[in-house]
Image (cartoon, rainbow, N blue to C red):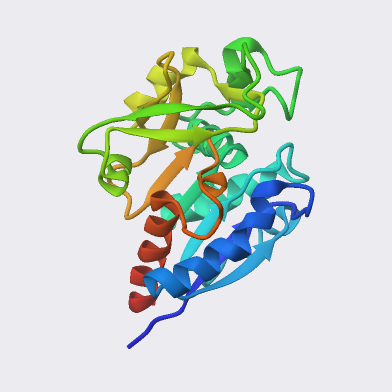
Length: 236
């Protein structure tokens, strides 16, 4: 039996955001090439705090600062606590770290410097990058044995970015101590992939895998989300 999985695309949809425009082609490529049918729904961030029921996967897409930080964090928490397959890219990566800091690490004052520039440096989970990654391409080294490494089938992958913010190095040990694994770093050793090993599928990347290639074949991390969503649909 072919199961059609429902996926929530969380973000403030805009044709001006290249990654948003890529999504329909990637979903079609997954259907044609992988036989994975996804029934996708765009969820504006201001609706994400009350519209997340019944989905088999949640993908928080780029486009920060989002209209609703609360909505994005609620969507991520729903996926994390409910065992729902999750992918966060660019802004989704940043907010996955923020949600984890607040709701798992208990850091109630944890903040995102883009959303709230007045956040104290000691409380900022996400901070301005020393050098902008807008339009940058580079390589990411992936931890052997990690979910990302398994999906990619290689210890090194090319990455495309479009961001000005990233994780605060001062916060990484706190996140690690509570179970978040960092499984990808760039050439400078800076964190670029995070995952929850005990979760069915919880991955976040500062880079944008949806920009990989020409859009006719889904990146392995996106294909992995789709496969996990179909598996989730079988049990729903």
